[in-house]
Image (tube, rainbow, N blue to C red; front, side):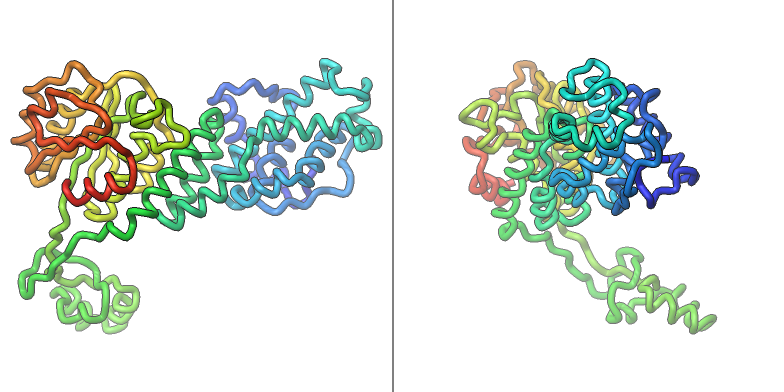
Length: 432
């Protein structure tokens, strides 16, 4: 039995979540001695984050005394209050928090075994009174929690700022990723990238207008669901048949806006295919090497991609370095990919452009404009592959960020920028 009153430890869902956490720990290869941590402790570690916990007044048995004191110390900490803002009813964050809490407890067990916790004698881990009065133990628990749980105070602030600019769904995704066990060593760097990204997007937002959609009177271009009651004049024959056969069903479909109507709109928003360099050099700023306070080239390029997605809604993006990464077509996936990419060395622009040409031919993207964004640090770009883009895409442009590349500049219309700020972003948006 665990430390929480509001957990049914025999419930099938509880056992399933315990097994999921065990498999997650094993997949990550974390050095947690699961033979010394009961399944009830694992359940506690998840539900203390997932819902509002109710701690027992005392441990259910002597064997649970150490875990009970550990949990009580955690629940009374400011750190728990910060994490709970993110984890409550959020499965992925609760799972990550559970693993981190178990790592802290596992480390505590190891320190007790080695006799490195002052004032703790053999057998004390079963004595509730001695554990509760041991100041050194409480300090040890606090230190371990801070080390393994990390600094999360800034994550909720970032989540809210991202949500304001890019929507709640993207904000939630950002919080999930920043708290993920896999990226703990990179959290400070990624948080800095996000803060810079949000700042640029907030400043450029007033200059990003969604592309136009025109209505062509009397010329149907497809079928869509009813958007407003003014669309009733355009209902399809199927909708008319429903009205005649079943007025009740027609009324239901009208109320739920699921009636089919003829679409007479023409989407004139520009279609763009983007290749964005994410090699190691793109994680530097133009002026000062590995950027922490200045905008990194990769952040500026991602801000441009998101601004274009807001403008056209028809953007395909592929990151590349030595390899080409999968296509992304929405803002949430672009931000997610940005937080997952690591600054690797090497750039293969030829392979990236070749993949874009293949995509165009296989997917019928001839009406798209290709935009290549790179700092140009590649000495082996194939002129022939660059020339192929002109027959594969309606238009082609290259943007060189703080660099030069004679092959690209001789083969493609190129814009060179020497600063990664809002002004250069607005300039590119106007001239792309």
